[in-house]
Amino acid sequence: MTESRPFHLGDILSVATGIMCSPNGMDGIYNLCAWMTGDTPMTHQLPRFGSECQPAIYEQHPDLRAIVMPQLTSEADWRAWLSQMVAQYGEFRDITPMPEVDHTPIGPLTEFVMRRAALRNQPGGTP
Image 1: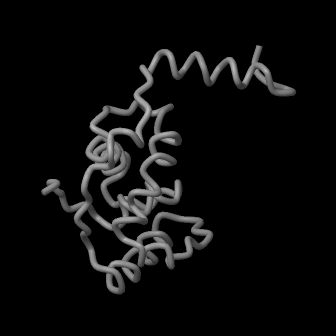
Image 2: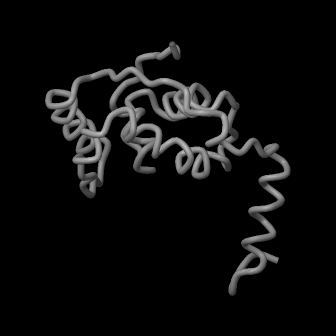
């Protein structure tokens, strides 16, 4: 049996959607990504980690697919919205790690260099 851990709905939605609504701030996002992948992400790696984690999150909790992230312009707005979502979907959800095959370990420095090279090759990219 695979071990699971409870995570706040805001942490889960932040990782699944890429839109920050974690009451735990970045710590909630880092902790969830690390738990799911068994790897420790650096800031510049979070978009990729989120893309890798999203399918597993929705596989474990398909009802969360129904949540539509609105345009939220202030912290007060997203906190009020998140309170509504918590009332509807529950405050915490158990999350199990994703299969190792679904995560590509890339060293933080290697990934930084790869991203910089990709930006350099785009029109108007950094030199």
